[in-house]
Image 1 (cartoon, rainbow, N blue to C red):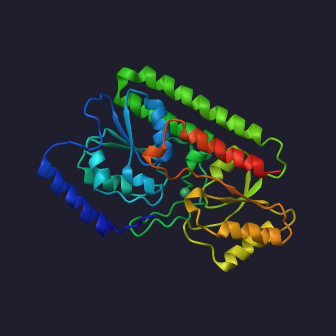
Image 2 (cartoon, protein in one colour):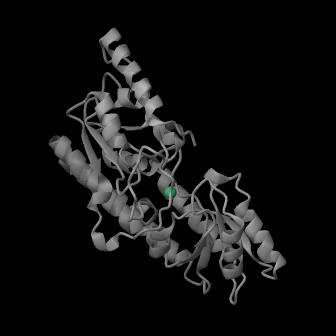
Image 3 (cartoon, rainbow, N blue to C red):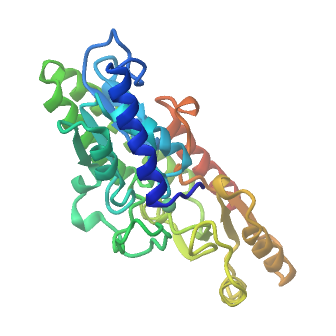
Length: 325
Ligand SMILES: [Zn+2]
């Protein structure tokens, strides 16, 4: 994760103003010259995948370049502002995930007509979960988030994001309303099937408890009827202290013990999850298992395609189905 202060970013954006004034044209700003339809930028990987599915050939979708650094800690640069200069829509998760950065990068883009949409705002209050995000958002984000922003990890809440994308594209491009409706409906059907298949894969598991790596899986656990007993890294990227780890070990080695401990590919170098599994095995939980669960927060546009979200979610379900009893 690259974290830069606000001052450095501002200096970079001044550079954009100068270079735009200098060349005077939109050349090579990330958009094809010969393609009609709405220009859509999204703030992180799952939204890119959802938007691709709804857009089809009728709109052009781009992932914010800064998003490759992760959904929580991204720092927009000139490249992001340049991409947004001619965009029509900037679709973000909201619910505190991106903090104030979408508004800042819109301002830097100089595109007063850019519509920034927080898709998470589409999700009914009663489906939102509270207060588990303890991420360090840095000095430039004063918000204290009460809502868990990881809504893309539950198929039920993801449906609202897809429908939000559909409605924004229909409003931007009414000529293709029926096409957006059709593609969104087809993708929502895939999400419903994903949930049904996941529940089916896990239906015989009597012990549905797990420890997740960061506080990201509450919507996933809710939709697939799992129970999260603890979190390895309360603050992502920061290893837990001894007391915290001790408490977690005590909890997991109780009766009945918690056997399934999760790691995330993004934090592959973290030893805390592995350490916890080893300690549990030493304490007699012989079949404690480390399972890789991807919160789908980081990926570059090159790694993504229309099937990426579903494939990663199914891989998560597969890994859990193998580890759970
Ligand atoms: Zn997260």
